[in-house]
Amino acid sequence: MTEATDMVAKIEALGGKLAEAKASITKRFIGQERVVDLTLTALLCGGHGLLIGLPGLGKTRLVETLSTVMGLDGNRVQFTPDLMPADILGSEVLDTAPDGTRAFRFVEGPIFCQLLMADEINRASPRTQSALLQAMQEKTVTVAGQDRTLGIPFHVLATQNPIEQEGTYPLPEAQLDRFLVQIDVAYPDRDTERDILLATTGDTDAASTQVFSAQELLDAQRLLRRMPVGESVVEMILDLVRAFRPEEDSASAQVRETVAWGPGPRAAQALMLAVRARALLEGRLAPSAEDVIDMARPVLTHRMALNFAARARGDSLHGLIDQTAADLTKTRAAA
Image 1: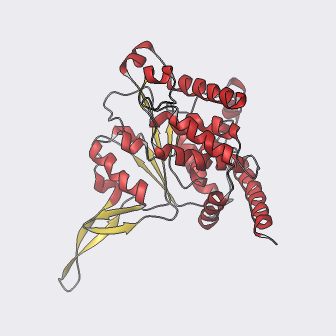
Image 2: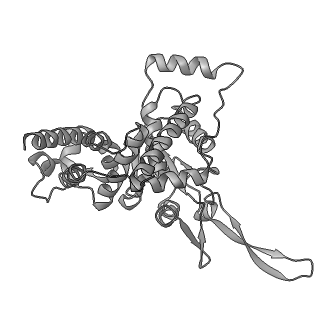
Image 3: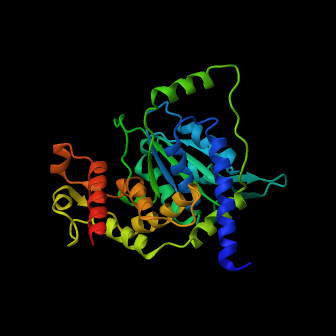
């Protein structure tokens, strides 16, 4: 079997396994297929996800279900203003042996897992938020001068309430950039809410089953990075990301007038991985330009900001991204 044939077989097998995982997840997290796809995208790409939504929309339930289905050791931390870095990372305690000798012993914090749910991450102080920076980027933490490796794989799924901002500490741009995708969790439609009502108010609750193991997820992450990406898709990614930088010649007048700062190279890297994941989830062997357009919002929204005048007018980043992507598509089609 040639290498190309072998890769095709592996991608097709992984697509079937992902379909099974999605079916298991949606037994407990009903109707939000887009949200499930984006959380799986974050895991397949080896990245982290930022879940934005009001309380009661099932964000915690989703993360717990993902932990089961993907075979990951999961922990949950409720972020509060009095939470300290040691509450997440762990700390050294002084133990006294029976013979009277004393020695320090490290007690691991909840971050030593494979899937960490950081619930309401913007309620913790900047000092505590920064404790996650090294962990999210380097998959290690330094405590008492010693580097300690986290779980393999290691993923953070953080949640934020978009409405209640009193007493919160907005995440700095450097930390927002660590999240591969922003996942907006909206209200369900009427039919979906009816299904949720019937499924969750009886005397039994649907159970999800494990589909992946941690090693199988690592194998899937490596396979994703080997997926071919056509030159036209690469150029589309570069054109789209650079179009949102106000100082670029390729930026439109609308972008120059509304964007304070645009996405950096990490956005292009995230988009390159995300389009591959979307193709995998749809059972395709390679991504297309449509995948780039579809993943533009979740990858770019949290990596750019509107200026004061645009915010005062009530402009939307989502609207700007959609319009710029549509204009770029027309330009490329006409070329």
